[in-house]
Image (cartoon, rainbow, N blue to C red; front, side, top):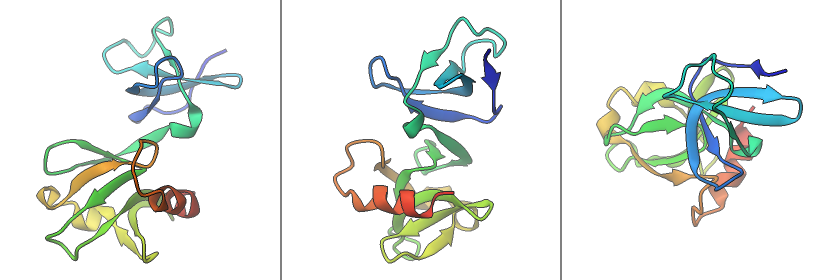
Length: 140
């Protein structure tokens, strides 16, 4: 039996071709799937088997290029405190975890979305693995 566990937007890597897919998560036993955005949410015939370890939620914000900011995204702002960190969900809110292990409220700064740029995601081949470690350390 399939269980839709959120009507919030998520993204994850497909197990078939490793492409990133956006959609709504469903689970069937041990398998996790995403229902694509362009399909009816009640149509369970169109779904993508995903790597559940790469499943991340959209924060509701965008960067200066109007790209959606997800958990696990590595973002940079040279104009605002020089923040460079990874987006995590901690204590009921989205924060930016920096290498110095400081946490900055994402939504406090993101109102000026033109200040942020997504540099990559911890699940991509981002060269600095420190951000993956921070993501795992600070995520709930």
